[in-house]
Amino acid sequence: MDRLSEKILADKARNRDRAAMKELYSLYSGYLNAVCLRYIANPEQAKDILQDSFVKIFTSMDKFRFRGEGSLKAWMKRIVINEALKYLQRHVKKDPLADAAELKDMPDTRDDDTGIGDIPAPVIHEMIKRLPDGYRTVFNLYVFEDKSHKEIAALLGIRENSSASQLYHAKALLAKWINEYRSKTNLSH
Image 1: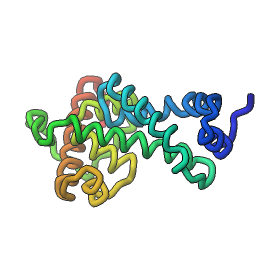
Image 2: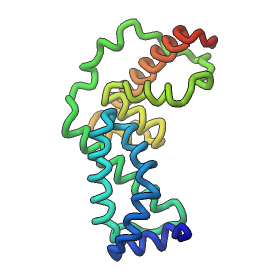
Image 3: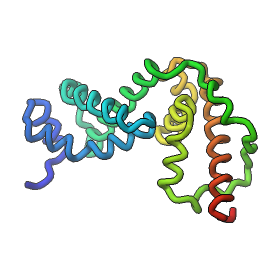
Image 4: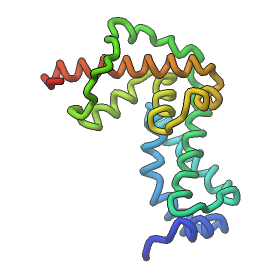
């Protein structure tokens, strides 16, 4: 069977067509799981959140408005991110600096940094997953979702300067780990 367009797939899923719902899950679950794992470090928790997200997706299909190919994927991604953020707000300690022990001996960020092109993407993803929850959340929203500190503050119920501070600390911690990785693997910078 040919792949259905997003509009047809969404329309069929809205009408509770089981085959369409199964296809929608099959097409997008891998991508949405990867999105969820950017926010939730524990794969089992991420899997639970993804399942909750699909329940919400299927029960909210009447709220989806088709705006061209890609709009269904974007809408589902937004639901997954919102569900991950809700989980973090309920289950994560409120003090984002509680893991400050990681911050000691952190290198200053440098304006002349040439990037991370010499480090494999899976290594960078693992480093991001290791960030404390608050840092990882702000980092992901800022870097991958292109949110401003004002938007992040509103989403997370924090102050804008807290968002900026968490992003700074996330970047600094990543810089420390990147430098350690380069030293360990003898990568030149």
